[in-house]
Length: 105
Image 1: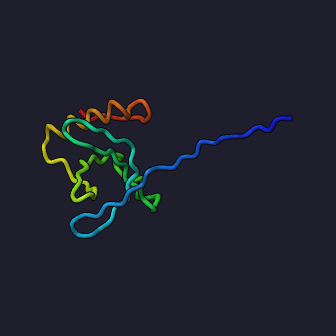
Image 2 (image 1 turned 90 degrees about the vertical axis):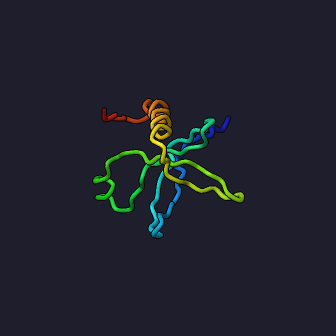
């Protein structure tokens, strides 16, 4: 008699917490990462402990650039509009197969 082993894929999202300049913390799920000649970027989805806040969220991705200083990673906003648009378009192309994405024109 052979023993069958069941394998179940468990969903284990990559969750990070970021703090703003005032020290307020925000929690995000990392949906995707892209590395290009411009740098490394993460597409983040806000996470909420309050279900009502989740329903009220716009559903927009938060895109940050990853930097490194003295061996530590840090994340910051993309200030250059062209860089942001290029990276945002790349994330939309990669994620649209997995998620329903409504692009506002």
